[in-house]
Image 1 (tube, rainbow, N blue to C red):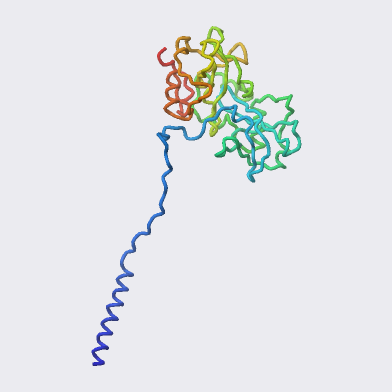
Image 2 (cartoon, rainbow, N blue to C red):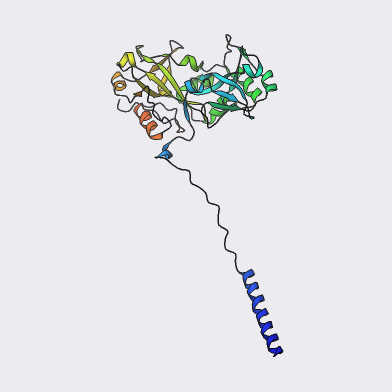
Length: 314
C-alpha cells in the first residue's frame, strides 16, 4: 500500500515538474503597452500652421522671464527687417532687474523662447551677462546693420538671423542688391515695429490707400506674415481691416515711412476683410490660403512664400 502511494506521489511530482517546465518554456504574453491619449482635436485644426501667429501690438509689452521663472524685463519694441520680412531683434528693458531703467537692450529674436502664455517669453540669460550686454539709451537707437547684428549674435551666442534665412528660398528680385553687399553690412531696411504701425500705404501712382493698423508675425520663426491695413478713407470702410500678405507690400522708393501696394482699386473694394472687433484665426491654413491666393502670393508657410505672383482675378 505504501508502495502504491509512493508511486502515485512520484507520478504527481513528475506531472507538477513537467507543468512548471512547460510554463517556463511557453512564450510570455506581451505586456500591455501604455495607453497613449490622442490629443483632442476641435474642429479641423490639422489645417493650422504649426506654431502661433501673434499681433505685434500684443507682443510688445510681453513679460520676459529667466529660466527660474523670475520676471527680468519687458519687450519694449521689435526691430523688423523689412526686406527679409522677419523680426530681427526684440528690444527689452531690464529696469527693475538691473536697476538701469534708462537703457534698452536689443537681443536676437531667436534668443527669446515662447511659452504657452502669449504674454510671456523666456530668455536664458543671467544678471551678470546682462550687466555686460550691449545697450543703448532710449533716445539714441543704434543702426541695426550687419556689424551691430553680428556683435549681438556673438554676445548671446545665437546664429545671425540672416544666416538662418540664407537657406530659405530668396526672391530673385532682391538678389542683385544682396550680391553687391558681400559683407552684409547694410542695414537691410530695419525699422521699429512701433514705427511701422501707422505707416501710410500708397498705390503705385502715389495715391493714399490707408495705413498699417498692425503687423502679424509667426512667433516660432519671427517671420512677418501679414500687414493688417485700414482702408477707411479710401474705400469708405472704416470699420473693416484687411490682412495683406507681407510680401505684397513694397517699401516706397520715395519715402522710408511709406509702403506701396500694387493692387487695383476695384480689387481692393472686393477684398476679404474683417471687423476690427472680430479678428479671424490667422493661423488657419484654409483662411490663409484664400488670402494669399487673392493677392497672388504663395503661402508664407510654403518654402516659396516670398514669391510675388499676379493677384488672382486681375
